[in-house]
Amino acid sequence: MIGQDLLGIEDLERSKIELILETAVHMQEVGSREVKKIPTLRGRTVINLFFESSTRTKASFEIAGKRLSADVVNFSPSSSSLTKAESILDTAKTLDAMDPDCVVVRHKVAGVPQRIAEVLEAPVINAGDGAHEHPTQALLDMLTVSQAKGRIDGLTVAIIGDIAHSRVARSNIYGFSKLGAEVRVAGPPPMIPPAIEQLGVKAYTSLREVLEGADVIMALRIQNERLSGAYFPSVREYSATFGLNRAKLRWANEDAIVMHPGPVNRGVELDHELTDERPSVILDQVRNGVALRMALLYLISGRAPAAVED
Ligand code: ASP
Image (cartoon, rainbow, N blue to C red; front, side, top):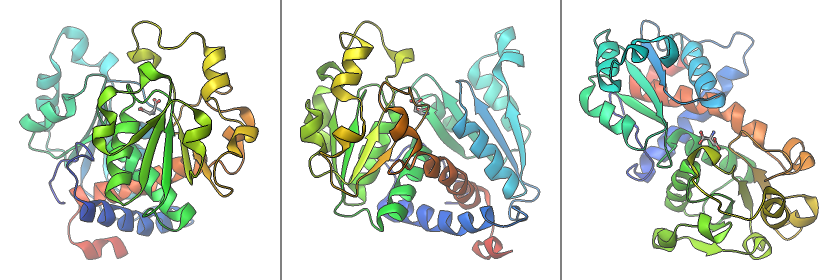
């Protein structure tokens, strides 16, 4: 994958997904060492180009790059020449002229990472574009599920909430389906895209029905920043109908796990208990995000495969 862009899961072959997940398992070991650093990307430069807010993705790309000994530069839009009306593409080209080995891009508009990738020499990783894709989140979710359940093939994954505006839902639908899971979705009807079943996904409007037989439950945040108008009567009603708590969890398989990409609106999509305690694997997702992004930076910007053993 050296020099290749990672723009989405839709066009990523199953064999590449498996390679990334296997490489991430090696990277997890580095994170458990006393000195969490290997020289694999020494002399390489990674630029974090985040035009939209981020806690988990941005911090974990930075930590991932540093654990591989890359030089990581965090670009900050508010203190850049974007405030002097320099365009996004000119900004990206300017940074590209400094010869980075990888540029990580997040933007609120779908398609911006792809447009930037078209004009940049350096490979681009999409760190979330509008409601389109969030491939690194889906990959870390697949890593988390494969380790928590021992497999992905044959599992039933229920994704609940604002499916229409969620890039996490879209990338996970592609990813889990490619790896052989059955993916189902549920949420208020206006938040379920009419064409969703064309992706091989079954849509439900009842929480009880979507949970019956589910091995993995993924709750999503309402994407308020992407909504215009009302999609459900009130937050209280949303939480009563689609919010999860221990009582409702009994509708799912006994050993089901609970996931959330974060940030969680406590008491809306998940209650406090399910946010903090097993079977929630939310903090495993965060931890795995570092190893997964180390794997990607290594595969995209690294050199010989043996270097990971250093
Ligand atoms: N952090 C995820 C994203 O950037 C999920 C969310 O914000 O709801 O898409």
